[in-house]
Image (cartoon, rainbow, N blue to C red; front, side, top):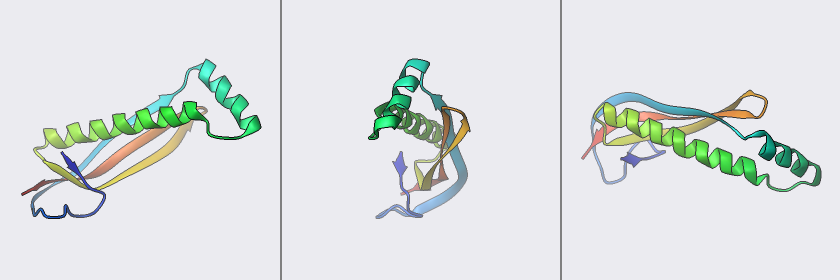
Amino acid sequence: MIIATTEFVPGKEVKEYIGFVKGSTVQSKHIGKDLLAGLKTIVGGEIKEYTEMMEEARQAAIGRMVKDAEAKGANAIIGMRLETSAVMANAAELIAYGTAVVVE
């Protein structure tokens, strides 16, 4: 699956626009890692527990978006974007979305 943040794939021609595709996940850390992250805010610096959590969330959301596109017969996704939001304390939703297309 080709994934592009642009509205086209360089060197390819869009033969068919299939439509909107998306994938999402909501992630949180267990209480132990959450406590460690809270302590880190006192001294500053990168909170690696949350960096890892968001990387896992990106991979899951993009993977689900690709499955959605494949199920619709696409071989590429253009205009791909990522968005995140807090859905509750210590939990984040990450959404990957774009336009499924067939390119040659």
